Length: 326
Length: 288
Image (cartoon, rainbow over all chains, first blue to last red; front, side, top):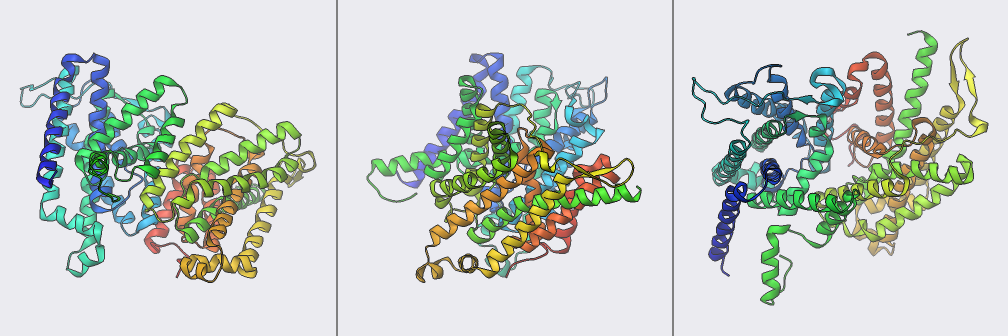
């Protein structure tokens, strides 16, 4: 297959997945529909991390912090006996995540390589302890979001988030919007600079780009989009705990990005499906499902460079008798 | 805070900091020499603690268990390096993060399958179970002082090993130029295996020593791992001295944080880290 056919096949595959997701509630039970909604939210989360890991070359091990901060923003902004207004609480949650990413980014982007990985983890842990140790958000018990946000704007209510089906399609819409938005960003000159930073930051600097500002912008944007995911997650489940910010959450989302194949937005979505799918499958078999999950992760690193989205290409190579390590 | 309480807190801070140094020194050596980021390092601490619990319930003596446990941990480290980590040296940090993250899940579940999810206690050996009276009502346990002394002795031993022995010289050379060391006829793979196993043994020893005072519980590796990361970041990757200084700094920050601002105790350590990073982004003792 030549590259054009390949990208056409990829496009058809993406549209098929989208069609499947849109049609899913017609066939699937309410339980599985909610699970697919969860996967889609995590796919947004994974795409936001892919902007950093896959496209800018910044391996963050603390991305759950921004997801969790936005989720807490929803819980804290929701009054005790009334729903919050969606058009207030949504921007608020995303802004909270973006601000946190901006200020943490000022610190962590001063470091590189292994330091960056450890420092992002440490700052995320700091955010975790803020919610875990202080009574701000119910401490280690977490906090309920008593009412899903109300979408009324100027007396008109376009949709109702209390309706599971409407909520599901809002999540699908959000996924498509974030996907399209990130595709545009990556095609823009800004996105090109990010990819340039990934392959050679010094070269970008000598070309006159202030790479720190670009990285900070990418870090803030990724935090904001993780905030979109955190907002949706809180609305979907109506409950927020410090575990949303835990480093296991950061590890899992990184795993989704890698499993799908980084530097590829579709791969991040695929990775989210694969990860949650495996998790559900394994936890059906045994309560020690993490053992199998760990085994899959180790095997994936050792034997599957490039992740799931690189599999078709690798299989094709074998079929065509080509040799190589692609 | 009166003087006696203050003294007790200082002793606690020293003991905690020195124990953290044992874990962090292995982490920083493996980072600095082999360029490997190992998230599973906290698991070795957890494994050490469970090993101490299991062996003590069999032998009835913690000191004997530690003497048995150290070679076991060393052998386990060497095996793990041979099986997995040797394949990671040429991979990028991201893959190292993932593989070792997968290992954490595996170790935690194996622990859950073999030992269960209960919290266990380990008895302090009878000969160290006394306390030194400091005032009419307050006293300080001998065992905690013993931990500090052992850790200090190990820090000295590590310095001697790295700076004064032929092995240490080869290790330091290996961290600068792997290929050159190899072409001089030194088996670099064996060298790396030794360093890794040493790191595992140190972390496991820390877990074994800590078992009687912190008890043995699921997830104990995770919190130690992240604190060790903070120490390595503050101290500067690859610097054993940086790790010692940073471990003591964190020991004091955490202990006095818990006394002075109990509500924000979990945060103090990270605030210290943020302050150090503002001052020196690559740690206090940056290398090279």
